[in-house]
Length: 275
Image (cartoon, rainbow, N blue to C red; front, side, top):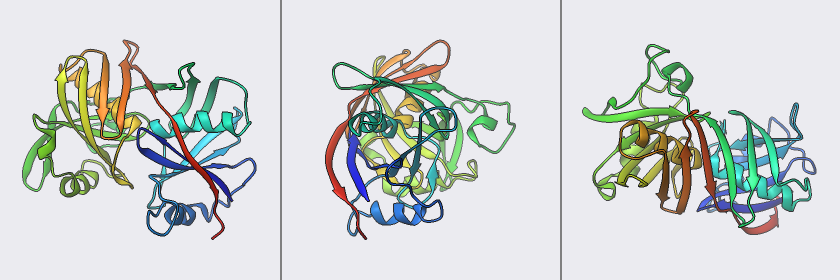
């Protein structure tokens, strides 16, 4: 099976052309576990497959390193846009893509970056997949972890996120706290957690624990959720630079509640998986 290894600011993926390499639905979860393994496989934060869509030419499907399927990935869909162009599957620079979070449009910019219309931020518990009244928002609300009350803001970008603000990001014990938030009782389907420090009205930095993947260098949907949460909590304006361990993303939260994300894409190498 031919593959391409790509990353968006350090959030890395094994990309597969599903038009040329059709994968068995029953075996792809195990393939993801094996190929994403950083010691015995290629190593990645996820396996992304380009397939035909139901109504559009392209659909993006992504599996986490633990074999679970993810609804969406912001850094992944930027890699996807570059990948289908390089693979010769399209000549378009504006591409509609079907995802588990709905239909999204990606645009390859002249400077090599990719801009994604991430759709609307979803703020209701029922939209996020939380316990509690489905028509209520969860903004600066208590999240109990190890008998400590943290304050969290929940946002869905097609997948669930909880954002926790801190005055000192480096003091956060991410390997310990990440799994506890991921499996918190408020989120029956687990959650991505992001610890965020606001540096100014236009700049935040964050650290991420991704559901099914653990600590990652970047999370595109998480950066979007963090920018939305920063605005809702009065820490920033609508346009913000988000600094992650792997690099920076430009995020804008429009008045329509649509979120726009712009960032870089890098191809690391290509190869053949034969195991």
